[in-house]
Amino acid sequence: MINRIIDFILKIRSRSRVKNNTTITGKNHIIGARANVMLSDGAQKEQVTIDSDCWLYGKIAVQNGGTVALHKHAQIGENSYILCVNHIEIGAYTAVAPNVTICDNNNHPISPEQRKIMRVYPPGHDSKMWKHSANAPIIIGENCWIGTNVRICKGVTIGDNSIVAACSVVTKDVPANCIVAGNPARIVKTNIDKL
Image 1 (spheres, rainbow, N blue to C red):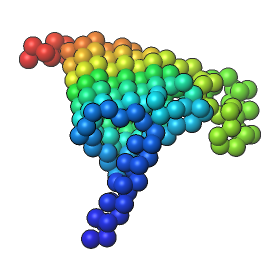
Image 2 (image 1 turned 90 degrees about the horizontal axis):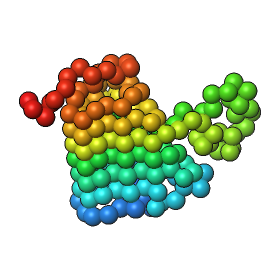
Image 3 (image 1 turned 180 degrees about the vertical axis):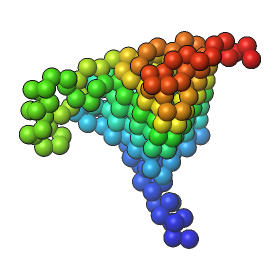
């Protein structure tokens, strides 16, 4: 009984956080108890759009001018993170499993000297913002399946209908209608639309 009450309270809080920090269109959204949308470094709610019939159980963090778009019937699993300072797009009918990280930036500068400078400033300081790291957009097509514990790196495009196997690290583009697996992810099956 107590767990149900806690879960109910968490769902109300999550819905409020998500609603206040996104532009939601359509209807029939499912917002999980631990879902969250975090905006920082000048990001605005208009930069995160969630279309109708989406399920959001994970977390979205947007900084600076980054934009995130979830198209209709997209699903983001529990404990999954979308970390954006550039652009991340999740196509219609695409499902992202739990514990996935989709990150369009390096989260930190590569220069050893700049990383040393970062360490002396408190959390939230401008030197720690993602805009100072290399970044590139991520586009995930329609009707894709992204397996558990996957990491999708900056600059990647995943074609429609493709599958990324569990525990893969995607560092390069994935063509449509194929399965990729491994670290780094490689094509293991093509033409799955003809199966």
